[in-house]
Length: 151
Image (cartoon, rainbow, N blue to C red; front, side):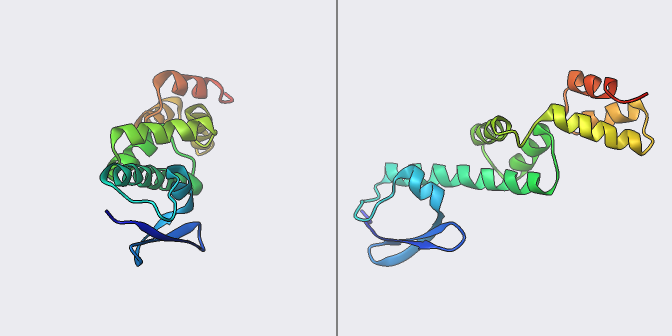
């Protein structure tokens, strides 16, 4: 079994991992902390699977964070983006739940802002309803967003 012989912190929140004295890979520092990777540890198959699972989770969160940093998105839009990137359904759900919990994804807020933006550009209620539906916003959320618009 390979043994972790070195962990060296790098810039950009990464850690260089050495196995048996040779460079292996660069891993996000939060993944190293979550799996409690330490020097001297043998990396057996179950441990490698745990590490791979955490790396997939970290990539999914990173993809979603990059998307919402550019513009606000609905939960369904982010789900489609993660699906296109090959993220498993379980990890997609975990990622979206986490982003909703911290307030980075909120379909109510998204619908209200998008409806207001579309209305300012002259779109009518049905056009707004269609656009929000296309973005994956639920009908009841869309209805509330449209009802909140100034006449």
